[in-house]
Every structure is written in structure tokens, then in C-alpha cells.
Length: 427
Image (cartoon, rainbow, N blue to C red; front, top):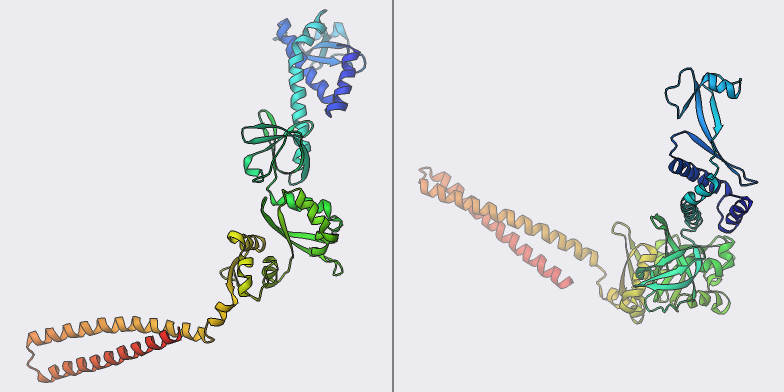
């Protein structure tokens, strides 16, 4: 090694961001292995590299003992005192054992190991750099296609854009610069794996953060995003300042801000709605551009029952249910949309009808029980007749009980029929 080699380490530190101390440590480790391999040494050795001159020295480290049992790691007190009288039992003596041709042989042997350590250090630097960018927006250049995957040039590494994260119908060309959302950064045997996306809702959010200064300043907050990439998205926003219109801030003068985002997302349609703490208001806003007459929230089933004008029904539902589906994703409520005429056709006493129907069901259950009781009584009467009771009074009692039960059951049946007819009329 020489001064030029040390200067090369300085250049590597500047160009690749790898610490010079880390490189020197890797080189020292490699040279220890090279020394032991090329010179058959079993000694405990230490490598010293002069950071200024690049000079390499090898020192054998031995412990001072009274009686030597292992010559590779121990030295007698007498021998140690011949080197320096200050040594005592237990001290470590370092003896220079640098071979005459070690500089050339060791450098050749260690070269591959050093380069490998440099590559590993580079991978660590890249991983740390992009790990911090998870959930953030980055810009890359389309480098090449591999099967259906797209490899993005990030400068010092590549990012992967798989088919599942590509916008359907969007055309990609080699050399094109595109904005991407970093989904995940992980380590593999081949280095860091950077997974990026063009379909993630976070991409829409980050693009608006760039285009809308009020978001960067904290005046406007993006509360929720629902997206069907390449087709349509909905974004709910709110403002901490009553004087700032969050929707207007995101749309921008003459729609310039939202249009800038649309152009970067394959002309994807974007609905920006106002977020509201009241779920009824929020659901109504989320169905924009459709008009909403009324929203009723069913908290137990997490359902929002929405009423819209008849002529707005198709707009509220959207093509293939897209508008309603995105509104449900945005709000977290299952959206049940009905047209206004359907609600008007429902009788005002619908709740009474439901209650009557419930009572009718209970009555039918009671009828089944009474019918079973009647069958049991008839069976008992047959048994009485077969036994031919002598007691005439008992026979009369049984007959009277049966007659009464039949009369009661007849009345119950008539009442049930009347109730059923009345409920049918109400429906």
C-alpha cells in the first residue's frame, strides 16, 4: 500500500459516502486473514496501517507468562525482559513480524475481500437512505423492463415497480422520469429492495402536499383518501383556519392545482370533498358530485342510509357503482343509496306495521303451541274412552274441557287471520 491508496479511500468516502475508518477496519481484517493464509501463521496478530503514509506493519501479540505452553500466543518473562525490562507477567508483548514481501502479497489476497466489504457498506448506506423515505415521494427514471416489472433508476440503486403497483392503461417509456411512492424498503442477499407504487393512495396525498402550500403550512389537512388508480379518487380535507376553504385551496385558481396532480396520474378524476366530524354530513359530502336529500346513520351496523333525488340516483351510484364504492372507502361507512320516490311510497306508519308483523309472528308461535296442546288433550280423551271410566262425571269434565279448548282455538285462528289480512293491506 502507498499514499495513493489512502487517497483513493478518501475519494471513495466522498463519492460513495462510506466512512474511511470503516474501510480501514475492513482492510485490516482482510490483511490479518491474508497473513495467516499466505504465511501459515497461527500467531495472534495485529495489523497497523499508517493513515498518512499507507505503510502496513504486522505485529505478533503474545502474553507474558512464567512457563510457555503455546509459543503462538505466549512468551516467557525472560524473553519479554530482553525486549523491554518493564514487562511483567500478564502483559501483552507486540513483536513486529512484517514479511519483506507482505505488502504485495497481502494486497493481492485482500483485494477481493476489501471490495466485497465496500459493496456491503454501500448497500447499508443505500438501505439507510431509502428506509427513511418509506411512505414518501421520490422521482426516478424508467431504466428497463423485466417481464412485467419496471426497474427504476434511482441514481445509486434501482427501485422495483411491479405490475400490481402500475396504473392500468398508463404507458411507460424508457428514459421517462416519473414520481413514485415508496411502499417498502427491505434487505435481500443481493442488496436493498425498494418497492415503489403508482397506485397507492399515498401517492395522491404526497402530490397534493407539493402542489398546495396550505397543506405544507399546516392550514389544510388531508383526512382521508380513497383511490381506484387511473380512474377516480376521492380526497377528504379539512382546515384549522375558518377563513381558509380547504376544498378551494386544493383545487386552486381555475383548478390549476388539482389539474397539475391529474396530469401526473394518467388523467385520473379527483373529487375533493370537505371532511366533517358529523358522519351524516361527511357521507353526504363524500357522494359529491351527487346531491343528497338525507342521510340516516345506523351506528350498530355501520350503515349510512342515503336518500337522493330520483334524477341523481345514477350519479350518486356512479359507473359500475364506483362513486358509492369510493364514498364508502373514504368514510368507512357502508353506503345504502335510495331514490326519494321510494321513500315517499313507504307508508307513514311503517313502524307500526313492522310491530304488528312482529306480534303476528308471536301469535303464530302461540297457535302452534296451542295446537300441540289440543292434540295432547285429544289423545288423553281417547285414552279415557278406551279405559271406559265408570265415573260419568269425569267423562263430562273431559268433554267439557275439550269443547272449551276447541272454541278457544277457533277464536284464536279467526283473530290470527284477521291480523294477517290487516297487515297485508298495510303492506
